[in-house]
Image (cartoon, rainbow, N blue to C red; front, side, top):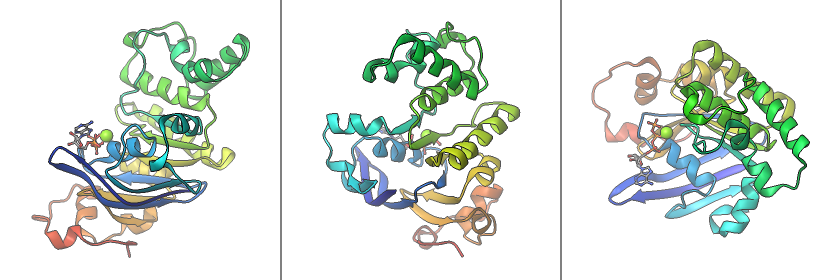
Length: 257
Ligand SMILES: Nc1ncnc2c1ncn2[C@@H]1O[C@H](COP(=O)(O)OP(=O)(O)OP(=O)(O)O)[C@@H](O)[C@H]1O
Ligand SMILES: [Mg+2]
């Protein structure tokens, strides 16, 4: 469904993606974990074409997307929803207009249909009567949920979630986890969930990939990752100190045993 091969991305002298490869099967929820600043958001932005890679291949449904022009990418973006880390709401628009933005811009729908879709998708993320509020009046967790509602009203086949449960209370986090699972089970949505929240990772993941030094160094089932002997993974999931990480450890590829 999404096949990423040998992806490279450099900003100035900083190599953020360094020969990264990753496969996401149709209908799968792939969780990507990794340290802050590692490049997880950059990876998602490459997939939706907001950042273009220096080299490498990204295939979505068999189409090589790195070769697409902006117009063709726009069409593809209708199928791919991205829930941005900070919400990425338009500050000058109220919640309803934010949620309906793509519907209003690109689809020829009547006002009532749009209003219904906005209300329904806000209800899915547990928000009611917030349509007329401005982003500045919302809490961080509410902004994140509005961002999620904006994606849901598009009914995309692919959803990329950038830290969907970070900075929200445990009950909201549980509701978001539940929603991610439901979207997979009921609507067969294919998704990538970037998170630091291991509870959420174990709950929603079909498989978990570890991002480290610009690459995916391991990809396995939640149990395989939980029981992994790989020092980088052990340190990350247990917060364990294991001494300095050697170059050798960073070069271990493939499935975690
Ligand atoms: N447009 C850009 N121009 C220059 N550098 C960038 C750009 N976008 C990201 N970077 C750099 O790439 C690195 C990876 O950033 P990224 O946001 O992907 O990290 P992350 O893994 O998502 O971290 P976090 O978990 O904190 O969200 C950072 O050092 C960042 O400064
Ligand atoms: Mg990030």
